[in-house]
Image (cartoon, rainbow, N blue to C red; front, side, top):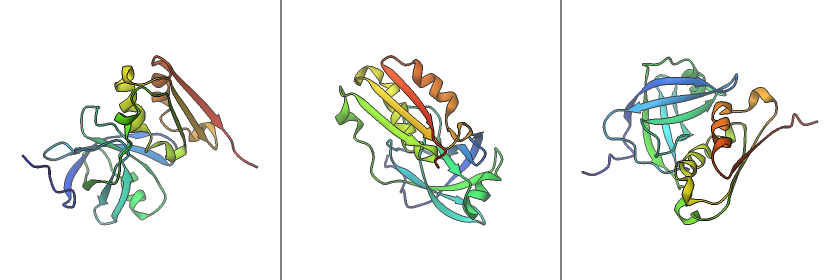
Length: 177
């Protein structure tokens, strides 16, 4: 069977939302039909019906069960509409689009992931992918930053990441000024 056309929108149901910070929420989306065949680093276009469509990185690894997750920072009309959605609501999803991280080519190597705030979202699926295949990689260093401690995303997961063998997580807060 051929994969669905990524240019055609598919209906997805909001399975759950996870508040990450005051203005960032992670949406777990269950897409109708065949599972989305994505790779860490790719993105989707999400339609908030009545508000518009915008691109969002896929913030979950294809090694994880279920649909996809996207972390959304509330900034404009589409993201505000998404933040108002409750579990059970529907959105449109097109994709996946874009390039992916060449994680298979990095097998055996030590890895360094550096991200801050919502910029950690595109790295999260790569981190999950590597930790789900932990035996294939060398040491893993994860450096996460934010303006304040309240702005650190994926805090619950970072505790899990730090427990993985040969994995070090460093958190930093720099309000600037």
